[in-house]
Amino acid sequence: MPELPEVETVKRTLAPRIEGLKIKKCSVYYEGSIKTHSSDTFRKEIEGAVIKKIERRGKFLKFFLNTGKILLIHLRMTGNLILATEDDPVTKHTHIIFYLDGGLQLRFIDIRKFGTIYLLLPEELDRVHGYAILGPEPLGSDFTLEYFKEKVKKRDKNIKTLLLDQDVVAGIGNIYADEILHAARINPSRRARSLNDDELKKLYDSIKKELTKGIANKGTSFRNYVDGEGSRGNNQDFLHVYKKEGTNCSRCGTTIVREKLGGRGCRYCPGCQK
DNA sequence: GGAGTTGTTCCGCC
DNA sequence: AGGCGGAACAACTC
Image 1 (spheres, rainbow, N blue to C red):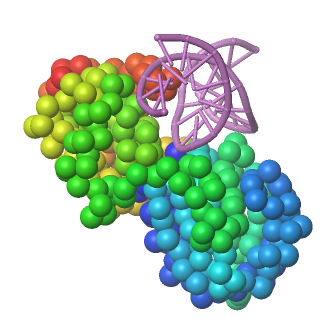
Image 2: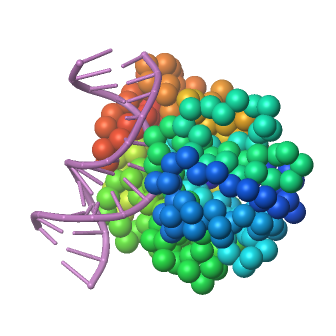
């Protein structure tokens, strides 16, 4: 489940290896991943382009090409971007291979085929709904406590589901939402509007803290996630609630529970998250 | 082998 | 009008 820390780690592992390299050739094995072009027109447009720079926005990766276009990629649940060489066997679920200078390959691998790829001009980015609605970067200067308070106080849904709304703040997914709420000692079912200023401050700080920790630990690897080098992250060893149901809370000793909230799994401590 | 897994979008409802 | 909640998608694991 690549969320902000995982996507940031992919960016950090890919950038020094492939910025400045040319895409000499491109093979598409599953056309459905590409949302803006047929595989033929996609190949024609991208072959010969040089990858100038890679950036992350929310859970999106942006590859700036010297053609003026941007390759926009969202990994959704099981997408991976992994560097390889021709000696590495092509694994199942490999949908696109970008052949780069020096025999290097960038492979887009996605078990569940939910990942999406767009090739767009900068001014066309907002045609992608999920990109256009993105709220501020949680680790950027636009994400202020004032903004967060204002946004949350207007909403009536449970705070866990609100943290997953990409228009409130970009990049939080199910794992970090649960961890953030535990760190802030807030019950996931609390109505957003019901949080007081102290709780909102604690929540705001916890968003930054947990995401920063996730990046420092190179992301959370439970099932499919690996970085651009194919390496697993370490953050799964430092979680307090996610996938911890049935164990004792590290803070108060109460048994961590798992419930369904907003249609997905939600883990929390009924002892210290009020 | 049916349920569980989740990021996003869509749709009906209030 | 617009937010909320739930369904749908997909393919694999357990």
